[in-house]
Image (cartoon, rainbow, N blue to C red; front, side, top):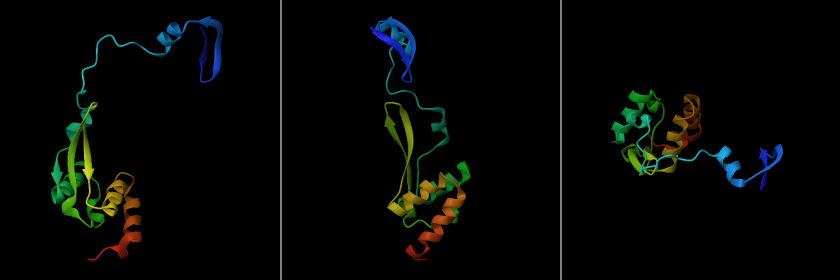
Length: 126
């Protein structure tokens, strides 16, 4: 027997069974889940690409400012899909840590990309 609680606060002083408590907390599945799950709808927006094609895809499809910073290894940039039990997910791989940081910055804001370019400008040979 347990006392019904939520977020550490007692909501009832009436004792209930653990099974009854769990029936309120968690809905039981009526049908078994088949794995892997289908892809999430956003997956259809992505495609596999490499190098300059991957940069062009990110620019065209997501309007990311990929031309605002230099990659050390643009030919090593790849977009591929990883199969998981939750469906396929797009993965962006880079050839080095600095390029990874730039790809991550694209996901934040354009200003962050410009800031990274200024900080790392001395690392690049043009």
